[in-house]
Image (cartoon, rainbow, N blue to C red; front, top):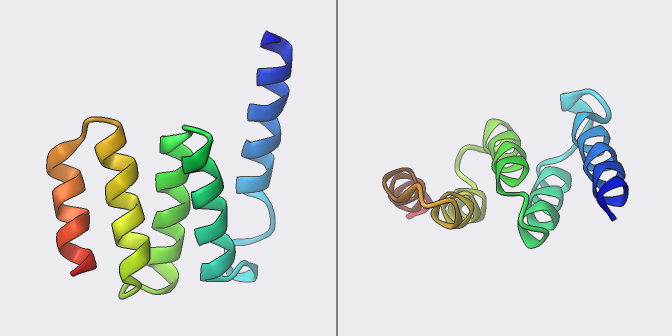
Length: 87
């Protein structure tokens, strides 16, 4: 079971590091972030949402979902800042 988790984590990291940043769309990063969030991989989700924000800093849903991930980690002040940016 432990080795299966390690394989999954390694696979997810490879997905995250995939093609060069400019080749993936904001939607691609957003969807990856949502998948990581759904699996409880909040650090990886935040990194994906940060990539979305680099591509489109005004995308409210990316800021909002980043807030959810930060909140899930107990980083309430950072979550509030992300929520504020989403507004």
